Length: 87
Image (tube, rainbow, N blue to C red; front, side):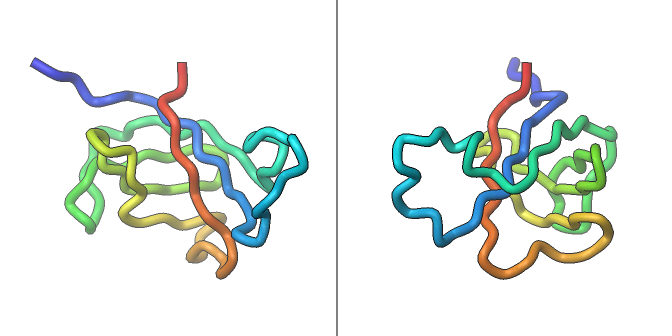
């Protein structure tokens, strides 16, 4: 039996950051948030996670963001969401 992660860290990274000059992905992020499972399913059909102004439907098996709102709006063009399981 597998259990879905209850918490993810989402990093919003500018797409134009190709060579970070040795900086980590975390250092290149313009925003980060820890989101927690709500127990609800979003419109995308995947579990919904919320926290720090971010609402995201995340596929827990692939860690793919299927839908996301940042402060109530869609993700700005030029930003990429990177997801990792939070401890």
